[in-house]
Amino acid sequence: MLFLTGTKGEVGISDALLLSIIGFAVVFFALIALVVVIKIISASTARKQGAQTPAGAEAPAAASPSGGTAAAQPARDTSGMIPAQGSLGEIDLHTVDDQTAALLMAIVADDLKVPLNTLRFTSIREI
View (cartoon, one colour):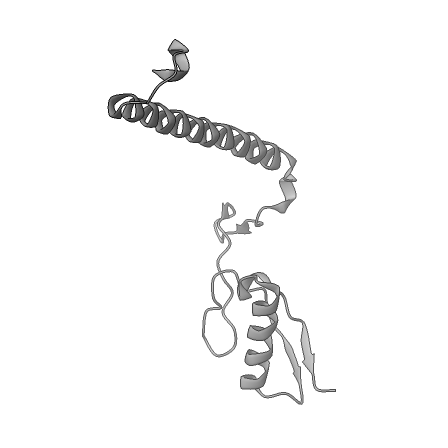
């Protein structure tokens, strides 16, 4: 090998192949080390965020008729339909039809790049 022996001359095919294999191995080991470091950092930040979440931030438990607590169930509205999982309540529509309100909410969610069920609209009024 030219760089190890210090002699001047041409590099043979076997030396070039060995150098390329060593180069690929170094790159792959560096990528594997980077993946391990990222996983360690993400696990530690997830643990810190979990520790910082206040105890009252979780969904409140509803009291069951027997006196115990049960998981909160979505409330039924007057039409008998169950709201979608993650929906956040009622909305007041002032001079706006349902289709226009749905389009406005979808546009806002798309502009903010967040899921629609994470937003809370309290009222929509035409100006």
